[in-house]
Every structure is written in structure tokens, then in C-alpha cells.
Image (cartoon, rainbow, N blue to C red; front, side, top):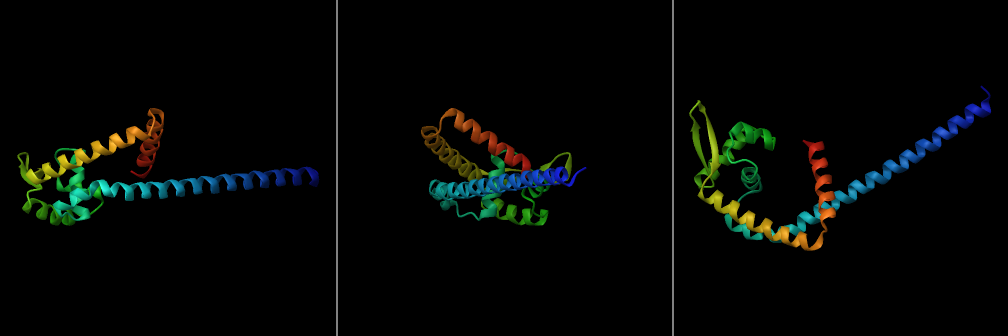
Length: 165
């Protein structure tokens, strides 16, 4: 093969690599922009959730209670797995939440060493307040986004969630 032909192939390959590098850099910048916008939205949504401050919950307590929006009953092991924290840490948080009537434990009749955890009276009140806030947010979003835009955002978010599971 002549050096001219092999040189042309090499330079064509380098151009392709440079184009790929540029595309990758562009996509990386788009992802960073998207991340910053999600962060900005999170900050803006904070004003909607300030009424939850009356419950005086820590971030970890809030995150644990939010799990009950997905599933009515949990075990300590399931919570630890979902939140990526130790069972000991879960037990400590649950102890405080139980003392404050946010959660209740009941023994699993099939395995007495295991307890099922459900929302208690204060946990149910917290959950209802979140439902009301989410309803207001949904109405706000509905007034800003078209159906196809909401579908695209939901699809994109679902893909990202699946990637990081």
C-alpha cells in the first residue's frame, strides 16, 4: 500500500476521532447543563415544601418517609438496601420516627425476628401534605408544559433513573 493511501486513511481516521471527541464533549456539556437545571429546579421546588418544616425532620428521616410513597410496608433490610445505608443506621432513624408516631412496627407473623414498618398517624399526615404539594406542582407544570414535552421529559428521566439503579 502506498504511503499516500495509508496516510489518507490515517488522517481520515483522525478527523473521525476529532469529530467523535467534539460530539462527546458537546454531549458531556449537555449533560452538565441538564444536571445544573435539575439542581436549579430542586432549589425552586424548595419553596413549595417549606410547609413541611413544621414536622422538624432531618433529611434522612424525610428520605425514609418518602419511601412509603412507593410502597406501603417495608422491612429494615429493604430500607437499608434502597437507601444504601446500614441496617443499624436505619434502625436508629426508625427508632426516632417511631417515637414521634411517624412509623409503626409490627412483627412479621412468619418471621418474628423481622418487623413490617408502616406509616403511623404523623407519617400519614406528612404523606397527605406531600400529596397536596405535589398536586399544586402538577398544576403548575400542566400550565407550562405541553403533553409531548411532559412525555419526553418523563421518558428521559426514566432512562436516567434506570441507568443509575
